[in-house]
Image (cartoon, rainbow, N blue to C red; front, side, top):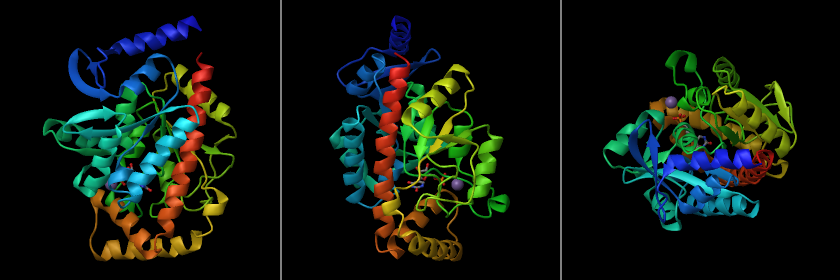
Length: 335
Ligand code: PSU
Ligand code: MN
């Protein structure tokens, strides 16, 4: 309708001065430079579907060159399904929403030399002009800043095992509690404590929905044994949920968990035993804090001879497919 188009236009006016590639976003009177790819800002201004994508999965979640190939393929899948991809990262201190091929390549080759950037790290990386690969929490924050409501990734962080003692709880969970972006993922890995992760999300007031199932998926496997309170069966149902959340101004995010496609979850058992071994080695080597997730991911990849990586890639692509359809359905709903 004309009203929603006007709203979109107003929203776009927040992104002052769209130049060829970059826009400036004005935040409470002070200016912070955020580079929004022209394709992304154009789509946003017209109310067209956009899907945000994170970048820690590229730098720390997968080895080169599979990380670059996957990042490109994920962007293609989003496009083929009618949405504009917006990979988010911080390059030379500038938050970027939508990366060029060169920028994507730069990030993929930087790998772990890029700083893993969660919410707490954003100001530091910007202040020192660094290169930051954004985790789910930082990506949500930047996506929300430019009004992108849908974000696709592989898996989110959670409550770590023994988290009740270490207090290692991913800031992804608190971000979901404070930022109204829908995150489409394949659940959380069993390197984490899944029941406590769900308890924590409930405390944070986050709606956790499972796609075509009643159970929360466990990333490499379809089931975790944990039931969710909300089930969605179509992209349209996801869109209605996201729209209701926005209209209610709840301010919280939504987690939409999509199980790994069955044909890729077959290696589940091998992965489960690799996870046990990786957890043991992490403990023995005293790996803690934000180094733990990348360590475990790399170890599991190594121990499964790459089959966990193949499963990881397959589920991210599936999430991109569904995420694009959700973004399209949401844009239609708001027309
Ligand atoms: N889980 C994965 N792959 C990933 C991550 C998690 O299967 O790449 C990354 C995401 O960027 C997520 C972050 O936001 O790890 C969580 O890190 P931490 O546990 O330190 O909060
Ligand atoms: Mn942590």
